[in-house]
Image (cartoon, rainbow, N blue to C red; front, side, top):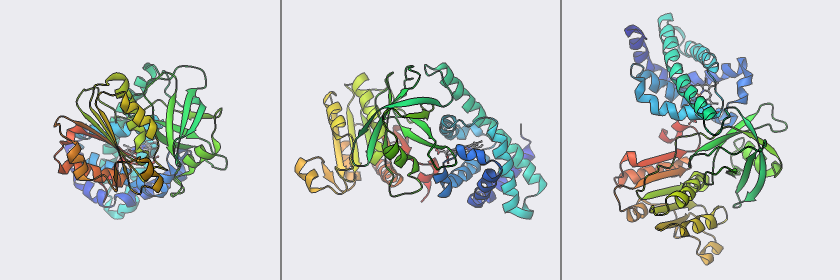
Length: 404
Ligand code: HEM
């Protein structure tokens, strides 16, 4: 239990730290990796170099500190992060290391303003926040172990099939190398894969959504080659160029709380670009388990060349009793026009969604790049869809969406 005094100090200094949040966590990561380079096997170096993870951590610590005496408020956010931590194998013993370096950074950046009393209060508060994460994650590790997965660490999978889905997206079908069954994922979940790339000093981890319906035979990930953003594309380019059928990859048990509900209300699956992957898993699950559920699949792509899963979506739609697929192309090619592969050109507009959406009980699932997500969430808000009917998953750290 934190004392009243500690709570007071933490709450009153939280805005100061928030103000200096990026500075503090930038210093924090620098020192953390200097003293514990082995942690570079866990952290995403691309996020680090772009300053993304810094902001995510800063925001979360600030938010948690603001609610230090009622941490249940931040529990949903903690759970979402904990899914990612569990899938990356963050363990209880890592927390004191992070705590020590966070305090070091606060001291460095605040200078004389960081009195012993303030540092002590923050040390205590961090301990409480860390324990919330550790407890939630412990439960998730246990669930992974007792589920039909039965494994909690990285496990070796073999690529049994590699298939080009568009000019930029390629699917990999993965089976456990030991011949065991695949644990069923929930539609919308992702896995972390870990690769050792020749010439890279550290292991690289990335999360990819599972793109097929849950089944005991294989996992399928569908990876976009990130060509424009280096170093972000290290893993995707490696997978596209170097990994083939017969090769092995390590992965952890599916994670994430962006999951299709089991209701029967009309559902809208809205995606942009490679955000189509969890939506496809959801769509195929609806086709298997609830083909009478009214389903609208709205997908935005640049054009038909990069657009993946056109046929798979169309074919799945035909198995639904009330299903509609709508494709929106930003820049359709001449061939797209002649094949009539799309319904609208330009962007997904508020008008488009307003016209589609009739039933107030409808559920919405949204996934795609951050600008797309911002636009769609805005449209949904403007047409009056209640927040509790909207589920979304973004690529990259959570806080990106809220940054302007
Ligand atoms: C991701 C917060 C402790 C390793 C994240 C994210 C947040 C966060 C907000 C972004 C989530 C997302 O991408 O959606 C925190 C807080 C912590 C904590 C508040 C302490 C109370 C730790 C520890 C480790 C760790 C102890 C391991 C040493 C990671 C990694 C990621 C991550 C590897 C993935 C993103 C990346 O690689 O850049 N954490 N974290 N975190 N965290 Fe933590």
